[in-house]
Amino acid sequence: MQSFLTDAEDGVPWIKIGDIAAGGKYITDTAECVTEAGAAKSRRVYPGDFVLSNSMSFGRPYISKIEGCIHDGWLSISGFNATFVPDFLYHLLRSTPVQAEFARRAGAGTVQNLNADVVKSVLVPVPSLDEQKYIVAILDKFDALVNDISIGLPAEIKARRQQYEHYRDRLLTFREAA
Image (cartoon, rainbow, N blue to C red; front, top):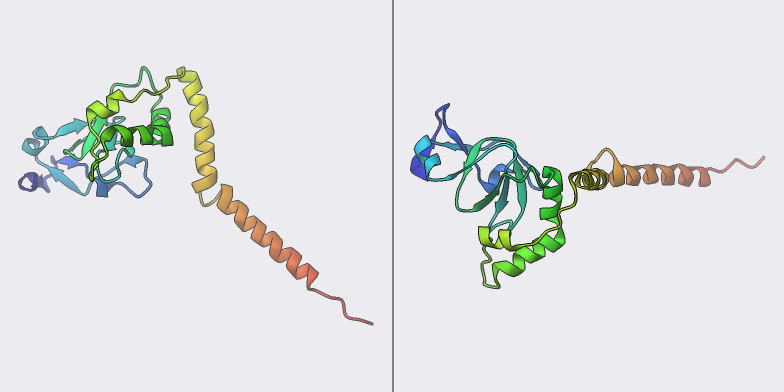
């Protein structure tokens, strides 16, 4: 693929694992682009498509916000909008049961390799779209509580520290004896 790299404005974004922030959910940019000839040797993904790593961060889903191409280290999922709300599918694919099933079906060798047949073979629940939206709203709130530095647990910890310091200072402030 190196021979297909380009700096030209019409280059096609080439999605690699290093392009996604640790713990990220979306693919928004790439460090490199390839020529159209290079893209023709790859698989195109479009905004809204899911991309799953098939080796390094095994089975980790990402949602593409860009048009680009992926290489052999990725799988893609598209055309699911009639069945799944994208954010529900994201949470579902990241869930422990689905990840464990991917690992179980990928084999017990030294290097586990996720492939399209493994992903297709995993059965997942399909609640109604309205129920999926409800579940997403709850999971997104929990995610914000746990991970958003300005709210949730970090803010609660900060508030408890301030409360502790307040009471400590009050308890350790003595009136002078007359």
